[in-house]
Image (cartoon, rainbow, N blue to C red; front, side, top):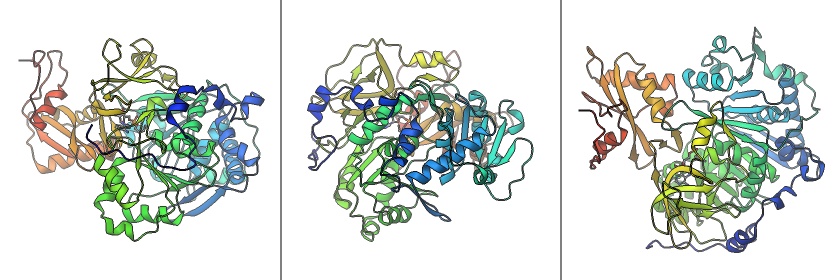
Length: 571
Ligand code: WT7
């Protein structure tokens, strides 16, 4: 190993010794942190908000929210009341335990009230990223048989309300909402609603949240997490985010993705910490201003964002007072050593990489303040979790051998099913006792894990996970497209970009206009981040004899690599 390690930082950290804690830790001790360990009454929203509203933290700021138009703050007591109101609004249309309530909107305080309100009723929340277009929205609402949707006037046009027989009510958050059929005015009802709500107590194993995510085959799958996940949300927010009472914490992820819920809602509020939410689009100025204005002390973001800040230049960052930041973390894609070095230079702090997935519900392999960082490594498994590199038969491989990154089954925040697809769920656990992540990695002699790539064809672009199959399916809906194969192409800023290879139908000619048209077609049908940045036309695409597009061959063409075994290719 020839990387220069960054030494552990001293301080009164929540995790003081990795080795010692890892040797002795037992998850049952975490239960004592929650009121249900004595009352037997479980609900994530109670533990995250109401518990603090009933304590001497009630007047502490829980949420600082701002965007270009709004600038607000809410104490824990106010969050409790507002989420009670939202709960009452949802209850008024019959939302009950187990119902799926989807939230499709840009960040706003109401988004957080609705998520918490739905959870207080024991409903299962389905957050949808605001960039999703009609096809993506339809797939998710249909698969989950969502009963209620909360959205905004702009986004309503992407919701095929009439085609969704299970969707009974659509709440609109906006001005002058015209109530008609299933459409209801959320803000009006919020004002009329009581701020008292009888919370619905659930079982630890009852459904909490459904995050749709992409694989390399099939439609996006609904990953179900349960209330029990709070054990790990809380404990990792302590050890990994190192959250302490006086911290001001900012997680830059949108709640449409799992980071934005596990660590944008649950983790920080379970710890009773002040949470910053900044709406609107990314810009380096805006982000530095946000860090400065709220005196953010703990900051959780992603490699693509750090790379964009890096390319905005060091002069810019010097114009802000960021001296309150004490801890920085990253997730979602490989964190390049170069970015870690940049972080050390401009913030005088280490950036702590963390590894986990939608399916894992919470962080699993991480770097901690008390541990040396080897730039380029994702770190070591959190205490209480066993990770290993295994071969395809399930044998654990010795250090420095590349293989499947796997986690011993049974950590607290593990997904509990794939919605409507138990078979898919089981496919993650085919090797006895292990969850197989789909990532390849190796572990060094000191137990640090090093990410190598995805084993499947899943694309990570700007930290967002895109399934090539979904994009290919959309592409072939375009009248000009006969066949399409989609790959991730390495990109210095976005990690990967989406590249599509297309064979045209008879009678179509390639042109720049057609490229633009096809790209827009995917943008409108799926989401802007799923549209191919590059499109290349080919007479024919490489396929197996059974007709499957061979993405590995496309990738080899693109990167000028050997194509490997072609024995299954047609002609
Ligand atoms: C995939 C999961 C869970 C939060 C965001 C992503 C990749 C995640 C890292 C990291 C290298 C990483 C993996 C993983 N990934 N973190 N620190 N280093 N790669 O969640 O959308 O479910 O994607 O993201 O390939 O399998 P996701």
